[in-house]
Image (tube, rainbow, N blue to C red; front, top):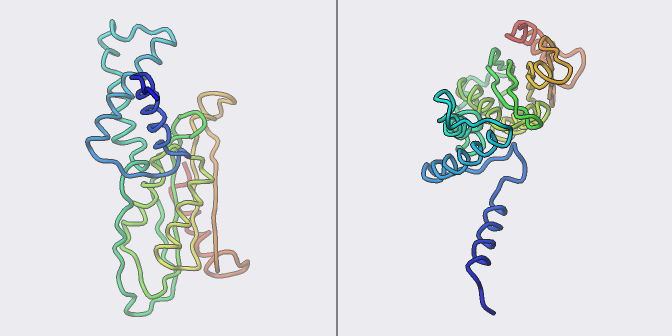
Length: 228
């Protein structure tokens, strides 16, 4: 069987398709070299997108480098959680056997809606009951940011953060609450920029009604940056 140059290019194309993330909120770590390669390719296609809409971006000094700027902002910032390694979990022995609630409030959430690729932003509150170990406080912020910086649905984002913390800390009681404003709701469609979406994922003792642990967490949410 004779394999033509076109067949080789076609096969190469399908291999690259197989390497794509199957879901927008998944993660696969890539090298700096691969990042630069993707930035170059993405910039080319974004330029084509602008021209397809009707902009001759190359003739405008304000937009002639826009495709590269957009590609860099996506890969290096907006969706960096799709391609970067997970935050290292600095854990410490719970030497005093502390069995109270650990809560971190005011965690900034900056993400992109998977449906329209428009930003949503807000605040997260994370709580857990420690067992034999506790985690370095900033790591809760880093976990939220790592999952947020991907194309997401807020419901999925809340679930991912909860499951990751539960697994890493081996805690049966974890709570995550996120409140965000979505630009896909604020600047298009219904155009209600004041609307705030809240999602919660509780497990263990946080699921029990009339429980002081649950009530303490709900009180922390009310004092959080959720009040836009």
